[in-house]
Length: 490
Image (cartoon, rainbow, N blue to C red; front, side, top):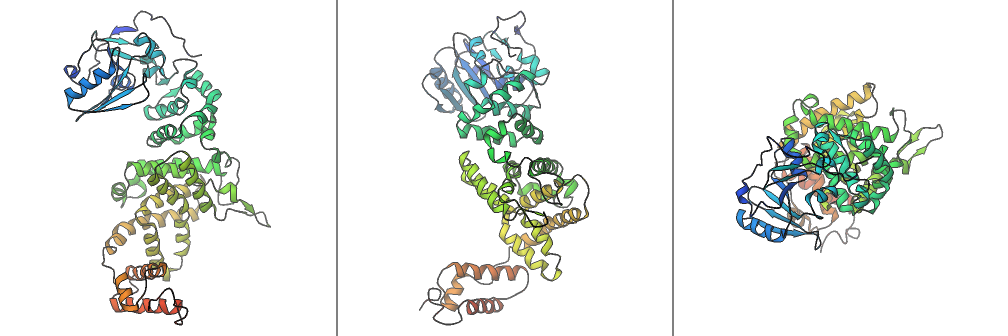
């Protein structure tokens, strides 16, 4: 099992060649009793560039932090409770997190940390490398090992952090660590949701996370965080799906990651434009939405008289469930909105594909789709492509036709729609008020939306045509003066 706190064997406190401190130590108010610790050492050993450095100070970290802040011209922020305070100094080029050395020595401090690769220190006065738990060897072996038996009891968020570290650094879990997580996964329910979400976002920001999320499911940790997902296990689907809902979710997530990594292969003409329109956070939330996109299916699942399986309205049900999950985990309003929009509309590209089989209405309904989805269009189409690819491992002509349609649609969005969208509207709300004495109302918004759609799809080309269309809509909605009350003023 995990190592108990040892006596230091020969060689674990050592001078270490090649550990270059990437800042001027003259900036520090002192070096005696001052240690570079934790993730800072890990990243230095991996030769990873960082602007964040963790420092543990034996005496008076408050005074040390204030002096360091003054020296680098930084802004000092204090976090945490008395005796457990963290002092963050945000300077023009780097950030220092200063804490007190816990316990009676730096070795005792390191014993309280989570994983061996985070339980290393470097004494800035003596230049001694301190590694009581063989973290350097574990790092070289790409292995994640807990420091002590009660590591998750002390802080259950470390359960999620273990997977985040493995995802970000490409590590595998030590068997004892994996076993311990399986036994302790229920403890995550004791943790503040904000801290869980912080770790989740960092997992979803990493590459190749579908296997990481699968491992979280195998340990049950995923289901303690997202019990809604467990209901998708074994939820069989219709003949268009080779996998149950849970299996399909992970297939689709894997395909989404492949698309992200190699957009040029699938969208050769639009890849650069997609990358410009989707920043890193967009891809992170797109993966999060993919994990949740079908959670509504077990709730609405029904079987027809011939045994045909239906999931009518699963996208709306799933969107509401996702909104509840995001609120429970304290996602920001903006991140919740993005997640919910993708899930609520994730079947819309397929409906558009089916509708466009009638070429007479193709341009108009595409414009309507672009207007409705707006800036979400590229993300929604990426999601739809991965979703379709995740239906089966065997090529299917129907699916291939949709993928070709989606590829062309992305190109049309960037090369056609965004260009014509710059056209000045033919008519405005002020025109409706002046021409028809129409009061601001939902009806006005609907009229303006229909006119804009007709303009962009080239059904109408001038203001006179827009006025006639508005008159027709008002007339159909209000055939008599009595029925127009509340809509028309005067």
